[in-house]
Length: 264
Image 1 (cartoon, one colour):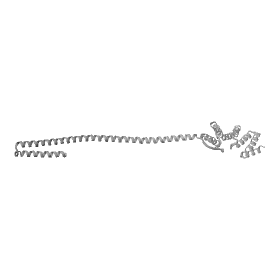
Image 2 (tube, rainbow, N blue to C red):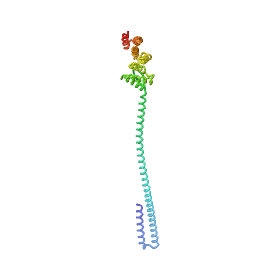
Image 3 (cartoon, one colour):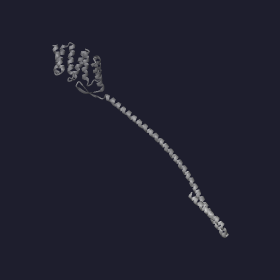
Image 4 (tube, rainbow, N blue to C red):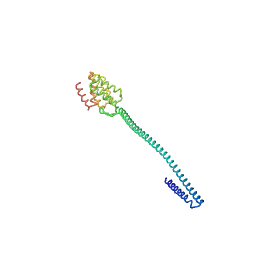
C-alpha cells in the first residue's frame, strides 16, 4: 500500500507539471511545447502503468493471501478435527486399557484362587506324619480320618459299630501303619460283644505281626482273657506264662501273675 501511495504522489506531481507546461506553452514555440507535453504525457502514462501494475500485483497478492488464508483456515480446521478424533480414540484406548487392567487383575485373582484351591485339594491327599502307640509313620489324611473315626466310635461304647468301622478300615487300607493298633481295638470291640474266637484271632495277628508293638503285651493278656471266657483254663495258663516270659517288665505281666494265682 505504501508503494501505491508513492506512485500516486508521483503521478499527481507529473500532472501538475503537465498543467504547468500547458500554461507556459505560450512562452516557447509550438514545436518545443508540443514535445514537452508529449514527453510529460509519456511519463504520466508510464507512471499510470506502473501504478496499475503495482495495484494489480497488490490485488493479486491480496487475492493469493486471501486464498492462502482460506486454505490455511481449512487446514487448521482439518487439523483440529484430526486432533479431536485422536483425543476421542485416545480416550477409548485409555478406557480399553483400564478395562483390560481390571480384567487382568480379576484373571490373576481367579488364577490365584484356583491354584490355592488345587493346593488345598492336593494337601488333602498328601501323607501326614502321625504317632500312634509309640510309633511314627506317614499316613494319608483319609486313612488318619477313618482310623480316628473308628476309634472314636469304640470309645462311645458302640462296639458293634466300631467292629464294622475297623473292618471297613482294613478293606480300604490293608497296608496301613495303623494296622497293628487297629487289630488291637478291633479285638477289644469283639471281646466286648463276646465274640471271643474272632477277638483271639485278631490279638494273635497283632502279636505275630509286631511282637515288639506297644500293645502286644496287652494283646497276649486279652488272648488269655478270651480263653478264660471260653473255659479253656489250660490254654489261659499257658498264655499267661508265655506273657510273663516274653514281657516281664510290662504292666500286662503284673496282671498275668495275678490271674495265674487265681487259676491255680
